[in-house]
Image 1 (cartoon, rainbow over the protein chains, first blue to last red):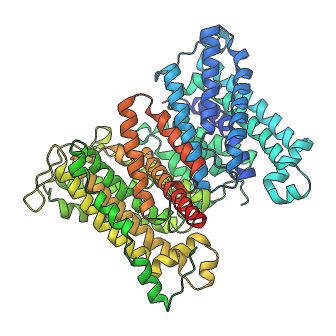
Image 2 (image 1 turned 45 degrees about the vertical axis):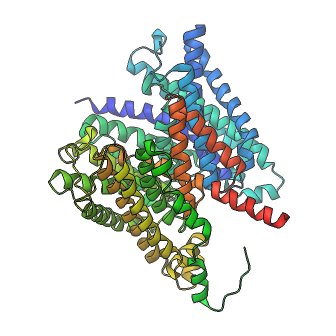
Image 3 (image 1 turned 135 degrees about the vertical axis):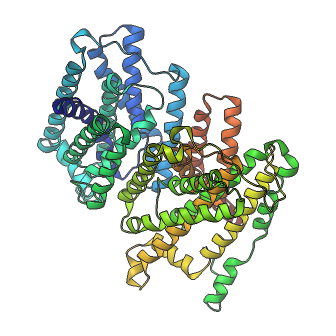
Length: 278
Length: 329
């Protein structure tokens, strides 16, 4: 039986990945009520960008990470301008159908270009060993979380985002350009997902079904954490990461039973999420 | 909306229940596969079963506003019930349907007490969670369900001791279509009743309905149980016609597929779900025949095109077009 510390460490690292991949969705869903089921497709895109740059062009791993962020953010801006913005007032069901269609297209495109196999990734030597890599993940995620919290709490842009999440109509009434704000937030959130996808390859693997497999986990984090709440997403991602790892180490016979049960009980206890208000 | 006047509430319901010629034409057209595409009867039978499943989701999503991402749970309970009963030596199809429906209905009734208390994102995630929990439970209990390999040794007897389930799907399609039609009649009657009207009220405004004295929670529990029974019957039909049951019948993929089909066809219209099932399943069959690996791409494009061109699904979009044409002429 592995030591408690190891399981906890694994779980926290896994939780950090989940947090990076879901925080963007939480904020955009909280702000515009736009149901973007294609969020994990951006994470997948980030992953494939890193793979391509490393394996085909020989870039170092760390240098590919900013590119993964930028590529996912750029792709999301194009999609937002072309498709999503027309559907902010459409029914949630139409939004679901549109974004599920995008997920299907992204999965097929990834399978067409890269095949359906798991992608090989050669990490640099200083990240070898599971301890080093997990420590690296945790450090990166903590730095980003601190930057996010500071950006939201201490800047003018952050104040506008918080106002728009809190009451979109009121924010518009005060002259805040909510549409522009949303486009930027959407790009940032998708970029973070892309970064999360790139970081996830070494721990979770990468194949075309990634966009679907981790969608469930991301949705769990968003709903348990509460819409639009960064602290909530963080807490939910940690809880999910640790309980999933603990469940798989100590009671492998039950598989993922434990995290689903935890989610159900939490949602029954607090339907709007741990830190949610609505 | 059309502004017809009715002498009283009875007249209103009578008018709603009257059969339109398009409806009769639709059901007659469902018989065409026997003549036109006899090589595709197995697919046609799958479509009829899926249409029944979509119809059950339409009752809760389209008419009562309960979005579910775990509806396959009830489908799977129906499938496994029939599979197990058949494995233990009773393969009579009609009683099988009954047992599948009862088992799924019981599970639906129990879970409906949780369902009725929540709305919005929490509701979606709770239905998803119930579905995922059931998959994990079925996977763990492999002594009962066969786990990942599926249930082995199912055999369905002849219907009325006469019609054998053949390899070409003649019996399977006839049987599935008959089940679909009978359940459809029940659903149609249900929707055009005062109870159906109350459900639509809950969908439109869940806060105002209790204020005018409607027993909202009670209504939601009732329709959720009915939908679960229908989903169970659909699952039972699939298990009987294919003589296999696997974890796939419970899974997230099936729940998501059925939701996509319903939205694709148009929610809250009875025929929307049927149309969605036909379009989606035929498109998937054709695309995967063209290109077995990348059919996802074309299905994805189809979904995007429908959302962009025909809001509220195919049937919703067509109704809008028809109305515009009528105004123009």
